[in-house]
Image (tube, rainbow, N blue to C red; front, side):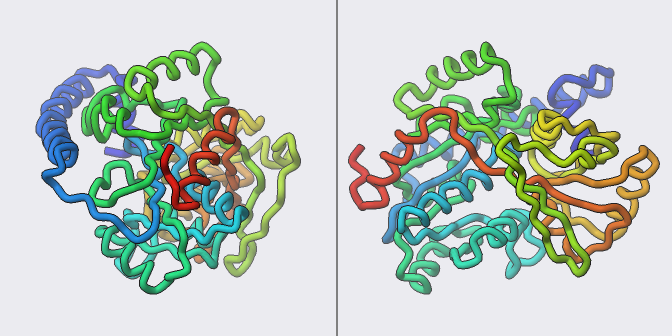
Amino acid sequence: MTAEDFRAIVSGQRRTPGALVARTLLRAVSLPYGAAVCARNFLYDRHVLPCHRLARAVISVGNLTLGGTGKSPMIAYLTDGLLRRGRRAAILSRGYGAQRPDQGNDEAAELRERFPAVPHYQAIDRVEAGRRLLEEHPETEILLLDDGFQYRRLERAVDLVLVDATEPFGGEAIFPRGFLRERLSSLGRADVVILTRADLVLPEELEFLRRKIRQYASGALLCETAHTPVALVEIAPGGRFTRRGLDESASVPDWYRRGCFLFCGIGNPAGFSLGARQLGIEPVGTQFFPDHFPYTQENIDRLAEKAAAAGARRLLTTMKDLVKLRRLCFPLPCAALEISIHFRRGERELWERLSLIASGNPSN
């Protein structure tokens, strides 16, 4: 079963008898998983399971759902903001999808392209990784915990939870019946809830999401962002990247508007596809791979054949994918959209809170 098949079944888009049976079985499997998650949260809430503190403040960026809500662009936004404010930041993450234990995953590679001097440690045990990072980089003033909402072993000064406005609540069902990692009521742990891709939904949908979030996180700061394309990054001969900045209107060159084939291996491919279409890109076809997909030359050759058969002259993907592709050969020109976070609501209030944390006074 492909990732697209799974999404079609879970979302209810596929209504065949086989899909109905699959949804029933998936719901049965989700019950013990959901019970285990609830039990684990209960033990942390009652301080039965220990929570470890590092010697620096931790800002956690996470979500409630499986798939892409924009954590990597948010980590990049926060890293850039802290550096510009004179703070020495470092990043902790699990490294899911890395090909080798000693090799960073695609998110790490993407962030390394932008922030080569920022320490980024990846390990399943992020408590130990954080201690090691601070031993080796004692100048670090603040730690960013990527995908940290469910990692409750590590104490954090603030929990930022991202909710993708285009796929907000994972079908309101626990995985594998839906895409929720835990119940919606867990939003009550969030200090800040950030609605990402808020520009891609209608105003009435956005208002519904605000009300829904307030039901579970009434005390949290509610922010809204858009994913703004800031550049086209192309693979040049030899695996080098060439970056073409976009103008303020974020308009892409005409040769990417027509005859383009979209592909990606991210958690929310629909968000990428919708965002591309918002830029006026009319793809001749798409192919979506599973999240953290380990591309091979054979994959790219087959992809290029499919794209050429559809009349494509260029391939377009995400930066998360592109950083894994620089050593492969492309029969067609290939580029990625570099995305930046743009706040529509709550940016000043967020940085007021983060500035208190960074200064060692998180009493807010």
